[in-house]
Length: 375
Image (cartoon, rainbow, N blue to C red; front, side, top):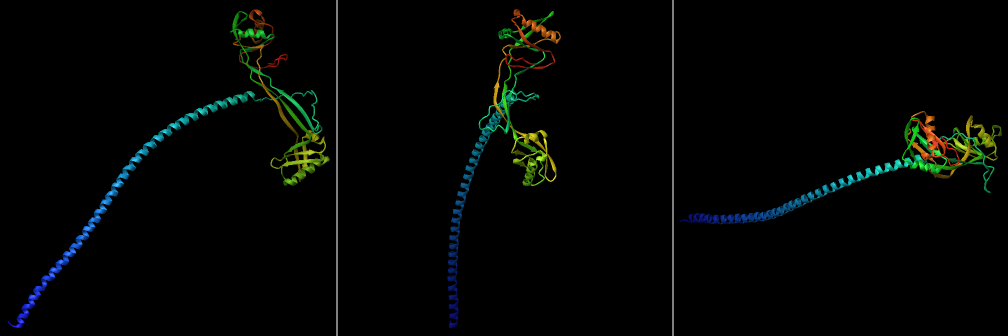
């Protein structure tokens, strides 16, 4: 065999010999790569398992928390419902208490109104002549020349409203009235007929008595209807200047006050007599750029003193009720008086009697013993 053939054979053998090694190396590399990939996959699987367990643990924790929250919610809901029921009960109790208090308040208001009506004086006082009784004693430091002082005593006389079919009878002796009041009824003969009359004791509402002390200034007056046609200072100067003019009935002014908001004020003169003359005139003309006529009024102060409430029971007077109109008013009153004058009927001397027929009303006024009753 030639060298060329030997080399060819050896070359093929070498070539054939080097291929398995490459294959082995290739497969070794593949195995290593597969091992590496397997290790990576195992590591990822382990990490995934860890994440899975962690996620499951978190999920379980969330589920447990959800159960706890749900239980707590149900518990809070039950407590809230119970509290609401309790608040509803409290609200109902408060509403009932408020209703009761409102009723009590209304009762108190009604009672207050009743007391105010009983003790309130609301009457038109007729014009009466004033009688001079005595001169008031003055204090040493009191200026007698500056004021006119007077005192009025107002006394509310106790009264009773007599309705139709009633009569008031006053006996001279208190014991007779006591005897009549012990009777349940009194049979009064009226010609051929008889009627039963029931006696009642009187109960009068409280009355009041007080003094009104009045002090009228002899140097000062009030005026009104003075429109603010000028600034306040100029208006005051014009008023003072006008009241100072003797030709208009004024005099020397000591002090002047003017209230712009009420268009009124007061003037004090140095001497007496000026205020009295202006009050008698009732009007005064002032110059504020144009003539303005003011209303002039007296300046006085008053006080209520010695306010007293009193009540009493007429021991000699009896109220008769249930009187039937069997005859005319005058004849029936005479029969009543005759009946109650007889000692056999437990009566006595009658001082005064007044009968009110059906359909009529009359107010009877009472006074102290020794003063005549009026009806």
